[in-house]
Every structure is written in C-alpha cells, then in structure tokens.
Image: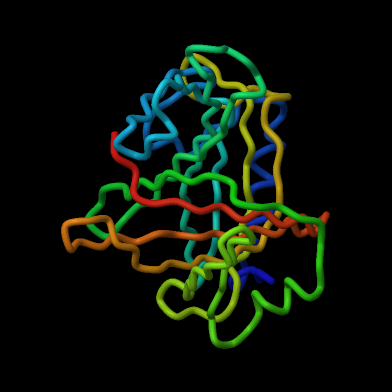
Amino acid sequence: MSEAPAGGKTIWEMVKDRLGKNGSDVPFLNPLDLRINTPVLVSKVNGPEFEGFTFSVKEIREYVRQIGGRDFGFTDYVLAGTNAKTFNPEDSITVRLRLVPNLAGAQDALLLRIYDELAFDPGFLEVLKDTTGIFEVRDNDSGTVETYSRINDLKDPYDAAVMVITGTTEDGKAPPGKVTSEKLEYWDYWREIEIGGGKTAKQYAFVEMNSDTGWFQIWRGTEFFP
C-alpha cells in the first residue's frame, strides 16, 4: 500500500484534505477542460460499434498515484452514449476516455470499455499478483485466449486515490456535494494486436480493485481517435 514520503502525507490523505476545504469548490485535473454533460464526439474510426451514438460527460475521475515519492495524475472522462435512433436506455453504452500525461508534455488518449466486473475473489487476486506479470483473458464462446503483460514489466499494483466528480461549476471546479473519493489498487497490462496492412497497435487492459469493497472491474481499450 502507499506510504507517505518522509514528513509528508499519503495520496489518500492529500485527496481527503482537498475535499475538506470548508465547503469550497474543488479544483481537479481536467486536461480537456470539459464539464459534466458536455458533448464529446466518439468517431466510428474507434470502432463500428460507436456509429449512431452520441456521447456526453457523465462523470470525471481524477486518479493520483505516487511513483518514487512524486505525485502523478491522470483523468478519466466517463462518457454516456445514447443510441441516436432508438433513444432506448437499454441500448446505451458507457466508455471512459483516459488522458495520461506523457514525457513530451502532451496527453496520451485511450478509449476504454468495461469488459467484466466481479465481487472480491481471492483466487483472482492471486492471478493479478502472479510474478510473471501475465494476465490472460479467455473468450468463453470461441475459447480464444488473449495474453497481456504488465506495462514496463512492473510486478506490483499501483495505489491510487480517486476523486469522482458528478457536477461542475462554470469555471470547471467540483461544487460541494458533487465530488466523492475512492481508494483503489490497479494493475495495467498491454499486448500487440494486428490492425491490418501489416501494422500493429497496443491494446490495453486495466484491472481495478476497490480497496474498501474488493470489487473488481476490468477495462480494455486502445488509442483514442478524435
């Protein structure tokens, strides 16, 4: 679990402090400067399943993790997709647009969809802790297996403090009552996939475990194309 640097606070303590500023609006990491309910274009270039859907920001999640005693953050924009033909809630889809700062000073963008989720399972946790860093996803229908490895060959999970924003002010802050916090552990994986024309791309898988409830979520996706 995360530990405080000498004389400092854990990321969890710092996030809790940010939420307790006498009822004032809370600033958060917002690289696209979006607001709740802002429309976001998700082109069918990202996949044919997105054609005919309109998306808007339902929630914004700021993740903070510590690496080598320094804080690093990234942002997930949770997008609600509505079928523009049926408007049927049963046809809706949810995706996450993840913005991660890179070494060039820009942002890497990933488009993620939920693959699976499950209650705490000690056996599944042992799979994630396996020292090989290998994570396999099996398609129950076809029997095919997708094999992922930890990004940069890491072995341990990341500890992350997450601010969950469900409402925003005009100047892009979270008003009191519209921001909560979560504590997570997560494992990041990737693999090479063929995209045609002799080219390959990275596919990512992120496994999150809520530290309080033990609930697991698996998110998968690739680079986002606006």
